[in-house]
Length: 370
Picture 1 (cartoon, rainbow, N blue to C red):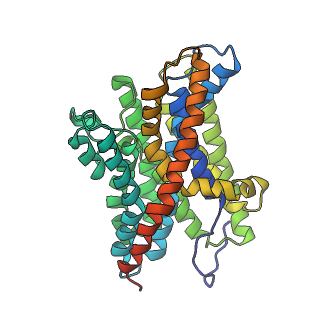
Picture 2: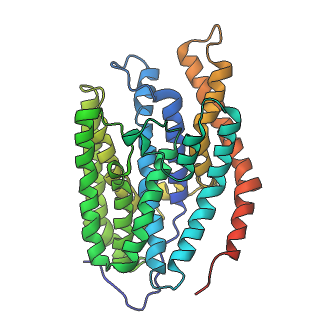
Picture 3: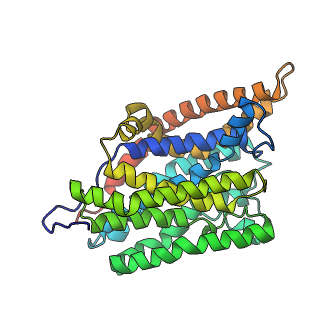
């Protein structure tokens, strides 16, 4: 049983390891696009084949972003749900967090590729609709903006649901949301190859994170030691185990069915949710301390811009340096990864300190105190 205390102040624990996890998720996506976006090789004959096979799963870093986002955003909503400024403060905070980097990247895309990237694609990304054209129109989607669209579409409805619904009912709603995307992905994979990116196929990670936030609230955070142990024993370890077994199964199926997509995504959400429970309830464990180290926390601070911009830095590299004489394919791919990762990190740090944070300081003029 999870014990409660009616007198404990309600706040969610500050876990530095979550910043490190976010940073590693961004790096996993970069590695995937630089090394493994073509998929896993049919046979592992060398260390490079093994690396490419592992990196072919790097796209699941996006699902890790979803789980973290669902947990963190729902935590904020739960703490503010009775405040008069609930909607105003949430959406202003969201705007100052998301829009500066997004506008900067969209501007650079338009400047660098004015003919290849139409204004229609820019506007769809700006209004968080980049995941819809893959379903109903021929307007091309660009880069990573589909996942940002998935998040923001989810957060158009979720704050109102949290504000007007009791936590017990929220749990029931989330249990339905957990099940539906897996069914949709199975259908999509059977008929269309399983790579569509619209929101009903990818919101289960957000739902897992939101569910964890509600369960933490019921456990009266910040956790007493008994509450933390109970949450890990009753939920975290079983969710982590189920996700790990599903991921192992998806890896085995990938060796047989080379276009499998739905099962790894289905496995990723509980795998990452269980990992998150472990980090929340074991903050002094050596893994949590390592993930909360200063370099990884800094990587987490720039992870949003890393995610948004790395594909375009990779495109610039490919335009100018792919096909150099004397380089093997393996050497060229490793060189691309190293150069793109370094340039993306430098660009993201510059953006954070010279653009995003200065603009972010202005948000205090738009927020209301309750």
